[in-house]
Amino acid sequence: MNGARYIAESFDALGVTHVFFMDAILRPTLVEMESLGITRILAHSEKSAAYMADGYARVSGHVGVCMAQSVGAANLAAGLQDAYLHRAPVVALTGRKEPMLRYRNAYQEVDHTPLYQSVTKASMDVAEARELPHLLAQAFRMAVDGSPRPVHLDVNGLGGEVIERGEVPDAVLPEPVLGRLPVHRPIAARDAIAAAAERLMRAERPIMVIGAGAIQVDANAAILSLAERCNIPVATSLGGRTIIPTTHPLHVGTVGTYSAPPANRLVHEADLVIFVGCHAGDQPTNNYTVPAQGTAIIQIDLDGQEIGRNYPGVTPVWGCPRQAVTDLDAATTARSDWEAWAAHVGKVVKDWRADMEPLATSDVAPIRVERLCRAISDALPENGVLVADTGYSGIWTATMLDLPHPGQSYLRAAGSLGWAYPAALGAQCGAPERPVVCFSGDGAFYYHLSELETQRRWNIPVVTVINNNSGFGQGTPKVASFYEGRTGSPEEINRFGPTDFAAIARDFGVEGIRVEDPAELGPVLERAIAARKPVLIDVVTDIDPRAPEAWNPPAI
Image (tube, one colour):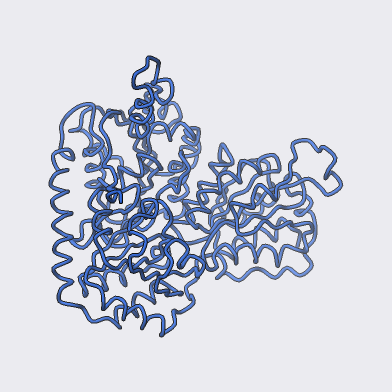
């Protein structure tokens, strides 16, 4: 068969249900995909296409696929940064001009390989169609293996036409198992489990810090079992949220720079921290201060390169986090004093929640974001998916928005402002039966609001909630501090609008609802989610109230 048919049939065999792309790339291949039932989502920017594939991959566990022609390769690479940082399995395909045009000032062409070096596991050149059977399979294999991350295939031809026209003489299709995160993973050694159990049994105040790696291997039940049987509190990174319900008595909250004060304080109080599927970078450790350097640590991770990277002297457990935690649970005898530690943790969190309750139920206008978060918490169905942007959207949803049901999911931007809305569209494609709600600030939504047309065109039933405060709220105090003692216009740095996003949505053919009265939030959200159609809710909020700020250890 020719290359176009081979790629399409390979995607079908690998379980790819949606491909996200910018024209013009692999057009004959896209035609072949239609006959196989693969949905082709044309986006309005390469970054949107990458974010959609990222959201699709995170919620489904299947490889997300995005594509762009040669001139769009740089934009597509930029869009892969979030998938790379979060460790999402994505395969990106770009076209490149034929070899005879290299180093000859070809129109619209730059070298693609350097663009992808820092955001992929590998960037591979596909020069001939006969290379497809091994390179396509290898791209998917690398994307899901070990620590998942994006892989790039640069195919011959501006839009890949050289590859599409070529013949594939040995058209063996990839194994379907390569299309999703693996079921079978390396097993942690018995000696490692024994050493971790022995270290845990010596602790008086143990706590777990869970990352996205535990979510990817479905370690929820294993974590909950260990936590409940041994009275070990559970904190999470943003990527680890929903490993256990956020209202569980042992749930401490999100830890790090995007946390409420109790989480950092309690992790800092612990005399043993068990990192599970968490890379322990600067964000979940509050710049490597929570836990303090020198704290006893057990680190469980599928990626051995992460163990001890940021906290030396750890007790290492390399292998599948789900299996490792299950084995650790079986090898551990609960200490009686852990119950008192858990009770202390629960009281600290309960007291902080009580302090926040008046804000979460406030009737003031403009609407407080705490009230908005409470309304979403109450309205999100038991199988709902919440997709949050970065910056204040990440902080608000990590600290004030509860996800109390075991079947709920939380997807967050790993740093790319504007990621959430296209990612939510991709997540809905990856989980069509689950209600998806996107939480975005107005500053983030401006990036990709053109995808309202994509949402309407494909009738993607995402409910998008805009925290509309007419500016970048997170940086407002910092900007103001730079103006102390001087005159000027600080608003020029981080203020914009006001904009009626509900009206813009209606112009695109998406139902738009503007909410200024907090009493309307609950009913509007419930109706929008139940409608199972594209809806945008523009919530007018105040830029001045501050999100909860992370607790920092005392300076030494």
